[in-house]
Every structure is written in structure tokens, then in C-alpha cells.
Length: 389
Ligand SMILES: Cc1cc2nc3c(=O)[nH]c(=O)nc-3n(C[C@H](O)[C@H](O)[C@H](O)COP(=O)(O)OP(=O)(O)OC[C@H]3O[C@@H](n4cnc5c(N)ncnc54)[C@H](O)[C@@H]3O)c2cc1C
Image 1 (cartoon, rainbow, N blue to C red):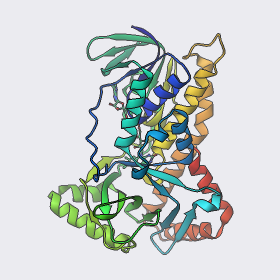
Image 2 (cartoon, rainbow, N blue to C red; image 1 turned 90 degrees about the vertical axis):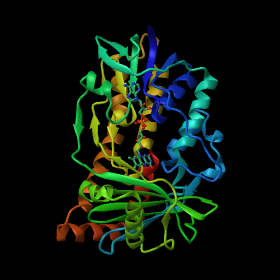
Image 3 (cartoon, protein in one colour; image 1 turned 120 degrees about the vertical axis):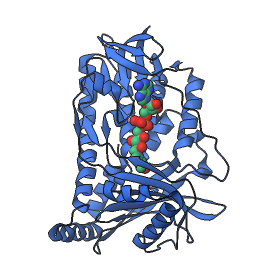
């Protein structure tokens, strides 16, 4: 098979870049196994949620999926309260940067569902197969197909095989953290506020969700050192739930009243790093290109930024350029490298700064937070950086 542009991987990033290319009338194919869609029930919310930034919202509008998302299941974040481990505190509000929202909290399965529907509507061909090799510019698939193309876009996640087979340089960040996620019910309304607590061995985030029948609902993302996570994982499930509920009620100081876990509990090992993003006839997007710590809730947003920029650059190429042209790919890398660097280093440094027991660093990080809290200019800078992908 000889194709023009093949997107390898059909997570949110793979589907969104395929859709953006189809929107620009490009000849694009998807290559990925078709994950079955989870059944969506009225009062049951997916524990996998994303904070979607204003830039990502604009991109979703551009590729025609924003208005198809169920508005009653989306929650805006209008304010963030962030706490240090020794009295440091800062808050960020949307009005400080003249925005009506800082971000939106949206379930993963809702985004996947509308992306799939739109891909069908556009008639984007989907080869339901996995690739297992890449040699001499050709992908070999599990069912024995050989595929060549002008450009392969690697959207195959943080353990990207395409990155591996094509020898694109990848710098690992040593971090063995594990993130636990679940939906919680609390007693008091969250008022569209997200909360985050930085502790010496963990970072706890509460994200506002729409109420369900049990009352006010929030999504928990609790990232911690592997040694701490291992102790929890060894417990039987009911003991683990009790232990987690007790600890997060202590850390959060019951800011929303006592919270309890109301969904299944999942955990994700974090595999962090960043790559050189391009090589001959290959461009990486999303977690295949860079995976960052979830403490800033920006990984997907960064990948959506890749999808938008890459599709725009491909669509506006000169008449003599192919989609996989070396200069075109260099333009993509140049356009993305700073955003990736800032987000990747920023989240890594923050995580390092807090997971450290030194007294002087403890003073510095809490003092720094309180300084930020007093400085409107820094606050605006932080909000604007997080709003752009
Ligand atoms: C706990 C946690 C919370 C997070 N919260 C946020 C948040 O609030 N906001 C945010 O912006 N980001 C968040 N992130 C980051 C976000 O989850 C990732 O950045 C995002 O899911 C990456 O999407 P992707 O499509 O690049 O990769 P993936 O979702 O991993 O998709 C990869 C796809 O490639 C396919 N694939 C793999 N190998 C092959 C192959 N050989 N052949 C064909 N197909 C293949 C897979 O089947 C899959 O469909 C969070 C991450 C974690 C761990």
C-alpha cells in the first residue's frame, strides 16, 4: 500500500491530528487497533478526565468537535488554589488574565466518542491493525501488510514503537512516580475551583466535576513516589480505598467536607521524557514526542498543540513540497520545541523541588508560592503560559 499521510495510533492525539488534516483536505489514513468504546451511562462519569486549556478548546472548535461534546458533563475551572507543604499558598483566577475560564474538565471517553464519530463522518480511512516493524521507510503490520507513505505521524503514545524503530533520540527523565485517579463525592460545592496540594512525597489534585446523584463530584489525581504507591498497591482493594480516603481527607483538610471514592480506582505509572520529534519522513506528536508529569494537567494539551501546528504546516506547504519533506518537518520541530521544553522542564523542576526533604528548599518553595500570590504579573504569566499549548 502506498499512502500520502499515515497517522499511527488512534488515541485522542492520533484521532485529532487525522481530523485536523482531513479538515485541511489532506489525504490521510489512520493505522491503529480499534479500541472498543466504553458504555457511557447517565450518572456515571469516566474517572479518566482531562483539563482542556482555552487553546485546546479553540482547536476542538476548529476541527468541529467542541459543539458535539455534552455541555452538561463538562465543568469549567474558574479558580485554582495551590498549597505548599509548609504554609505556602497561591491562587489563580480566570479574571486575573481576563478569561472567563482557566480550563474545562472533560471525560476522556466523551472526547474519544465525538472524535470517532467525526472521523466516520469525514470518511477518514482507518486501517484496524497494529504496526510491528519499520524498515527502509516501510511499516509492517501485524496482519502482514506493508505500508509506505510520504509521511508517517507517530501518535502511538509514551512507549512509541515508531520512535524506537526510527531511532529518534529520546531523553528519559528519571521519575518512577505513580498516579492514582478516581472520582470522589464531597459534601460542599466546589464552586468551579481546582485544588492542588504539594507534599514531600505526593501531589494531590481535586478537579471540579458536574454534580451527580450522590452530590458534589470531583476528580482526584494523586501522584506519588513509587515506594509510597507500592505500599498502597500491596493492600487488598477495600483497605486501599480506606487508606486513600483517610490520607486525602487529611491532606485536603476537608476543604470540600469529607470526600469518598465513588468510582473505580486506577493507577498509571509515569514514563517521562522528550524526544527530537522528527526524522526522515516521520513526525511524532503527543506522548510519543514528549510525556510530562501530570501535575500541571498539560500533557494532552501539549499534544493537541502538536496536532494543530503540524496539520497547519502540512496544509500550507509549498506546491513542490511533499508532506514528509525535510524542511517542512524542521519547521514543525522549530515551531514546537520551545513549548515542549518549557512545559517539560517546568513540570519536572516543580516535581523535583517538592519531592525533596532539604529545609532550605522547603523554605524556598513555600516562600516562592507566597511571593507569586502577591504578584499579579507572574500570575498572568502563569495563566497565559498554561492557556497556550
Ligand atoms: C494520571 C494522569 C492524568 C493526566 N491528566 C491530564 C490532564 O488533566 N490534562 C492533560 O492535558 N493531560 C493529562 N494527562 C496526559 C495525557 O493523558 C496524555 O498526554 C495523553 O493521553 C496522550 O495521548 P496520546 O494520544 O498521545 O497517547 P495514548 O493515549 O497513549 O494513545 C496512543 C495510541 O497509539 C496506539 N498504538 C500504540 N502502539 C501502536 C502500534 N504499534 N500500532 C498502532 N497503534 C498503536 C494505542 O492503541 C493508542 O490508541 C494525564 C496523564 C496521566 C497519567
